[in-house]
Length: 484
Figure 1 (cartoon, rainbow, N blue to C red):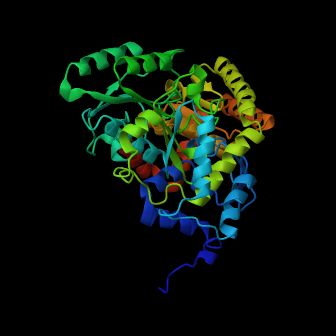
Figure 2: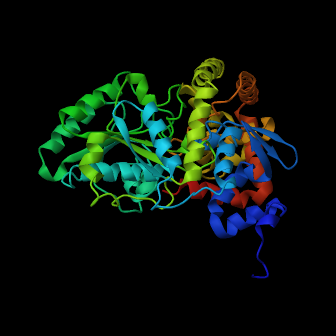
Figure 3: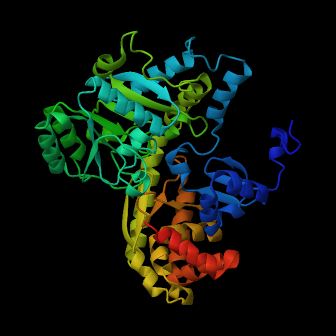
């Protein structure tokens, strides 16, 4: 053993500053710098249960991020933890690709009971982007590779592997990587989709295999399409013999008040991608769920059955956790709680929008998937000396929700963050187990924060950065975010 090796039993007792520096040295120095700006690295997490993260100093932090929707059941739900521990404690077979696991089989059965009728063929993987990759490959193979094009929506986020990235609408994420043939369209505009499908149908080299959509766009800032949009998309896909893939990775597992968001318009896609909270916040698992007709066309016979596989996809521990997660969702009436708490959250935020129109331009959401879009021009009213630093005001506008999130953490012990594709929006994704009191505390805290005014927010955040690294660092920070 190397003399500087740290054994697993010693990790928990090492100083947290060492963790931060090891992340900086070996993992992602840019991420560490970004987290330092929000004082996230000042928190040394000790434990987490439900909606609460507890630091080593005893600080109690309410999680309103849910790891981007991966913690619908909160942290370390005991039923999910127990399900995994039971598999391990009895030395049951966890990982084998030659021997079939009953946990994998019964998870598939249970999922098929909850998904729209006819969607009963399931491929298990480890993450959302893998589920999307599998969906794209399934759609392509369904047409024997004769349809090379996929259609996706502007500002969509479906993942960061090459296939999923090809149907992700962020130039910042895509610009340095090769992508598959794909075309974008405005989200929520069925007329634009019809025109695109008509145009492609006339060119044999531009035939469309599938349209992929989020029922509600998450990272675009919780963008909700017009009522009936998904139904119109379904009709158009049928008319042009194109498959419909719905990405329910963020919107599924009850996040918007139903198990899947597509249920709310009674739309049955050809393929669904799920992940995040499917593992109950404990296990890493994703699923690509398809109709029998689509699956049979692609993979049914023994010759093709190994074309799409995953070494760790469908392992027993992960599937046991997912079975338990589905049980918690139903046994604890979390869909009902999501509806009730979602109404409380949205009505409270809309009241704050009325009270602080200079701060909040729009509140959007369904269930407990909510985004607060801020009026970035409020920064112009800050009138704070360091704003004269070239480029800083622009950067502060771009990261206003990030500053609000940092202030909520610093002053009120609420964990928040912004959206990846729309930095004007603060993500509000509490776990589905969130209580009435926790929602009320969040609303009161945001009210108190906004009442302090933009100058106080800017002054506090910029002074923190100055205290960390000086004005020189602030200038370089501004340049790095302004770089295109």
